[in-house]
Image (cartoon, rainbow, N blue to C red):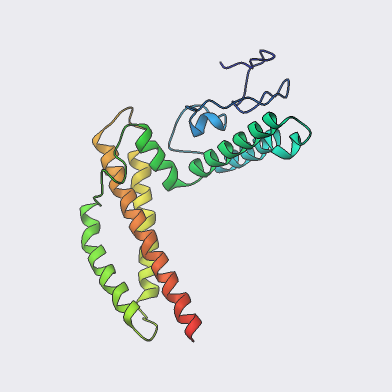
Length: 208
């Protein structure tokens, strides 16, 4: 149980005290879960609850509410607001949350582990070839639309695998974390491919 250093009230989150209203310095080592006042570190999160917490915490620490306070207090409000927004950005996004969890548990980062799932590699070669041909074409390639649907499906399947591997969370570095990283690498490839399709579509529309 963490208590306010000013009034000794129990804290619901580390950014401010709900009892005395004082802003508090969020510990540097606080996890995104701790910043938002969540309990255990888990894969599953309630997005509605996250949004509710974000709105409440933002109201509690927003710099505009401390406009007449001293410069130190306003600076603290700005730091806390940034930490809260960063925590929400991580936890509300499946890829960012999985990335954080893998590193938090001692797994490899994307620079250390660059592999993708073996079953994914043959598809990547085919997709790369199709994207290159479409890029060089003077007309819209009718294969891009079904490719886009396939990429969205593969992205969803990869994230389903991530969810399965992280439920329940391994308690330490394990082979599963390497497999999660491989799936996240696949998701990042898919996101780049989808971005490439969108860029080609916009470029062609600007020429037409």
